[in-house]
Length: 176
Image (cartoon, rainbow, N blue to C red; front, side, top):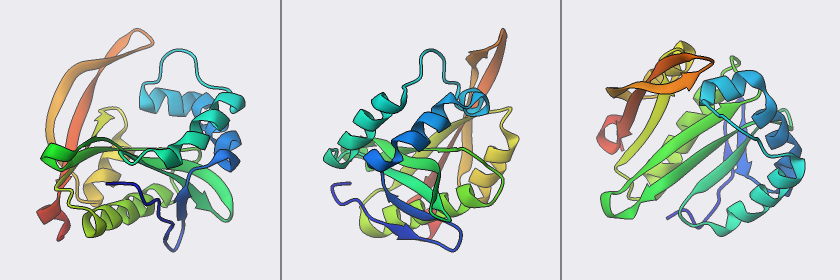
């Protein structure tokens, strides 16, 4: 479903297929303490070499779409459609930004949703976001995602449990 890796152009960002040239940006992203907290990433994170290997193989996966978010020619994050379920025409969305709060995330999400619903038969795109990430919840709702439920105490972070809010946008919600 995602064999073709598009370049999507917005006013603030350009989304391009990830490649080895984005490995340094990925390394910066996954080592950022705030990104780790917002994504609930425990454990060892890849170094630039591991990121290089990872990004070098993304083009070969027709079951996912990995795009680098570029602004002003700089890598500012990534947005991914993954966990594809062909039988149920659904997938997961995840996004991570090195420097949030500039409108990059909102535009990247809209570009990916527009692309996915216009060029694939997808019916449902879902995600999970930790309840303490109120900024992200607001952005997702602004982009058409609706709250569907809560996974209670889904994340243990620095000795405290946090809920995960489950959200999704359906093709009819998006106007597709």
